[in-house]
Image (tube, rainbow, N blue to C red; front, side, top):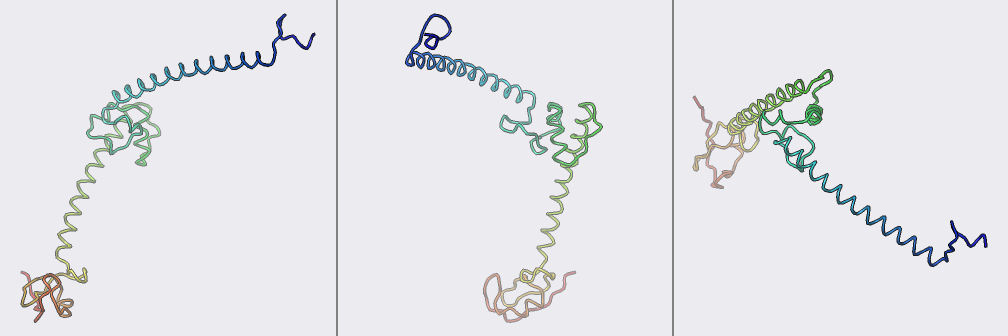
Length: 183
């Protein structure tokens, strides 16, 4: 009779024990589901607060990047963590910065330098395009200094023009390639 007892005076068969265990398990899963729903609401609130604090960043871009910034005002609303992340991604040493304003100052400087670099890069590309426009379309090495006769196209250097049997632009037969001088 000692083996038949479980905890007090009641005895449980194997079927009743299984039923009690399943009821406990279902009660636990219902409680977990309720807790999960509450946690999801908290996550949504955190994301909304994050977007309010960082106007230059969207919900999807939680990681901060210099390209996410549209103006210097966006830097002021960023968290210390985001500022440090931007500096780290751009290989800027921020050790020794104890205050947020120091990090903001470094990111502002980085943002301004980045804008200046983009402007100068655009100017260099424009100069490169102008320089490329003066190069022979065949060898891309020498300056265009030849006119192809009968059609009159100027697209090659003298060396390449003399080897042409037809114009690379209009496919007209080349009678002669004449060296020209620009003043």
